[in-house]
Image 1 (cartoon, helix red, strand yellow):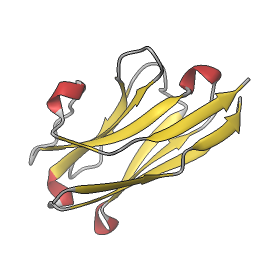
Image 2 (cartoon, rainbow, N blue to C red; image 1 turned 180 degrees about the vertical axis):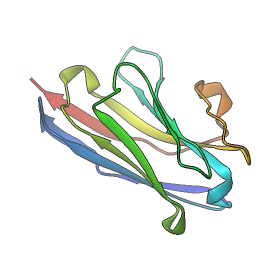
Image 3 (cartoon, helix red, strand yellow; image 1 turned 180 degrees about the horizontal axis):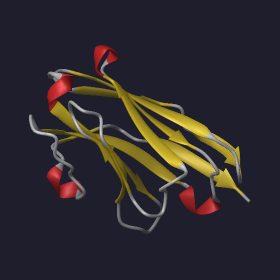
Length: 126
């Protein structure tokens, strides 16, 4: 059974930082691309970024590039999303997701991911 445990969400002021973590079990973590998505009320779920399975290469949406960093620790089955210089428009529920890929491929669409975490709320106050 695939299980996700997400943590680190909360309330922060504009300009502040948060670090989200996603711990995954139930499959060989090394073989999966991990993506971070977010969904604000009334909006579509959008990708924040993802990290490839073996070489840990990151991809970021333009809206977060330079502010957010994704990292992974395959030994701990963990992916982190470091969010700096937060803005009110970053307010959303953040989800991690996983998709199998033994080659270092980037997945940018939510439809490409097979497994999803429950989400964690991030609120940025102005």
